Length: 157
Image (cartoon, rainbow, N blue to C red; front, side):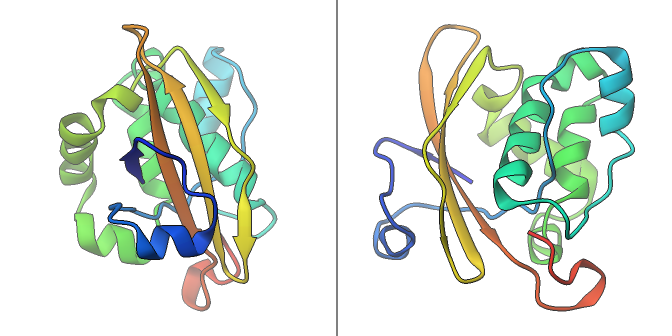
C-alpha cells in the first residue's frame, strides 16, 4: 500500500508510475466498533471465499479500529492476512507494527473512508482508498493485491 497524491486509473499505471505499492493479503469486512466485532476480527483467518474488495475493506476497518480494539489488534489483523511475500519482506509482527506506526500512521484510527472502483486484471487487483484522518486531512492509498498461486494461501487474495 502506498500513500498517493493521484489515484491510479489502471493496474498498468501502478507499474509505470513511481509509486511504492506494498500488496497486502487481507480479509472481509463488516463495519462495526463493538467488542464482539473486535473479538471476531482478532480470530479471522484467510479464506479463498473472500473477494479482493472484501479484503481491502477489512484492512481499512482494522486499521481504523486499531486503538479501539486495543493492543494493536487492527495492525495484527492486517499482518495475519499479509501475503507470504509481504511477511517475508517486513519480518515478524513487532517489526510490521513499527513499520505501520512509523510510515502509515495516518491510516490508524482514521475517521472515515471512501473507495474508488477496484480494477482486477487476472490475478492482480488494485484499489484506491481515501481516508479522512482524525485531524481532518484526506489521504489516499493504493492497495495492490495478488491472488496467491500455491501453498497454504492458494487462491486467496
